[in-house]
Image (cartoon, rainbow, N blue to C red; front, top):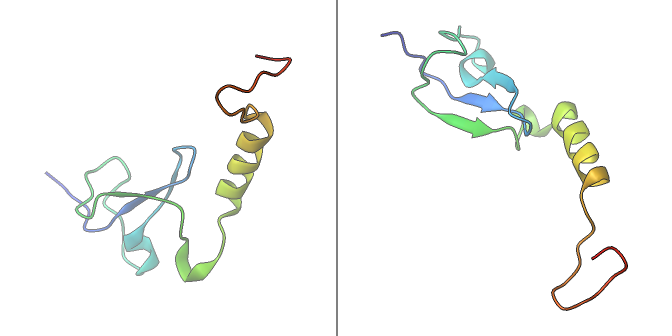
Length: 78
């Protein structure tokens, strides 16, 4: 069975971002293959830059997220 030595990195919405082997200039065995280093969330991108894809996903999530209402507090909507 073919296995990649790297770590598969996923964006916050589950879309594949990249394989860590690609950052080292090597070739990934394939995104559909098992990765020896596992899977990691795309929270810290290479060289300290921000991930625009993840930022956009989080911006949309925050816009449609329900407001936080502490227990015991009544509002018009609850």
